[in-house]
Length: 382
Image (cartoon, rainbow, N blue to C red; front, side):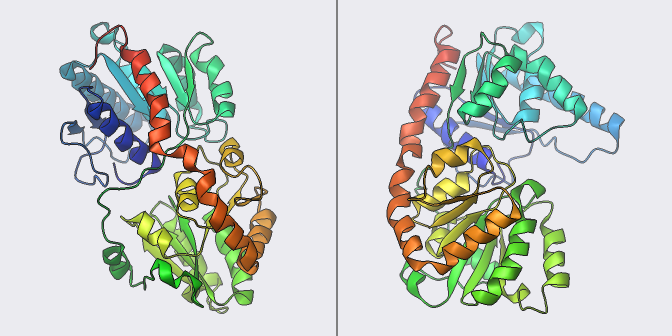
């Protein structure tokens, strides 16, 4: 539960389920020390501490067999009659763990949190996906297009639920000031959005599919015409150090490096969004981007690459945000337009929040109720 979008949705779901009368255990391969989302104390929280880098193919096979055994042991001891699994590799390992006589009656819903048409796992994992996904009881996808792709993989007879990412206001947000102090960044309040200094925000994982490399390239060309703007990047990931080095080596002469704030992990994203003036999603592909919906709910004018069927659902037209082609040219032109046109940003601020109300947890949770009911209707709650 270290801060990803899938983990956030898991926290919403398990808290909702236990409040609805289900007995719940939250099980992760990681330990519990890095948990960044609040979990209801009625939930049994178990961290297996089973994440480590594998040294070669054989070590990877041995490690994954160990993880499957640990999952099988914990699920058995919990007495669960139903399991909800999140994310591709975890889905496969959980299905493998349930593939034994003791757990043959346990029903399982697998949940895809990315786009399997784009995010390939490598030939071995893809083969395992084809083998094991057919053993699920039901499947949850984030868009109709992904559901259509997955249906023949899981089986035409399996129930398929389409449930988008949900947003929920945090009841006890932590202070952004602490995060910003650690990152040596000045924080402004919502009242300062009209000040001369303006902030373009990205929030998310710093990995190749998120397109930060092309965002940085676009920013290096845009900044000279918009010196009153800063680029704020919030998040961690495997490509962060490489991208920071790229900026340092290639953009120093144009003063671009000094216009970029790398915040790292931020605990209070709503407060961060309240301090910014626009939002960008430069991804190459997505499942259903949490941060984009949250930004629009915060009233931020947004530009997003057309990187997923979900983008059309989130930004159906140019009244609520800019949806641009999924390439450098589209991102560059969209950002240039958004940062230049004050009236356009004002229009988006006024209409974006209303357009994403349908993604509130209170609305989306009803679909999750249907998933939970499909797993437990004949078994009693567990």
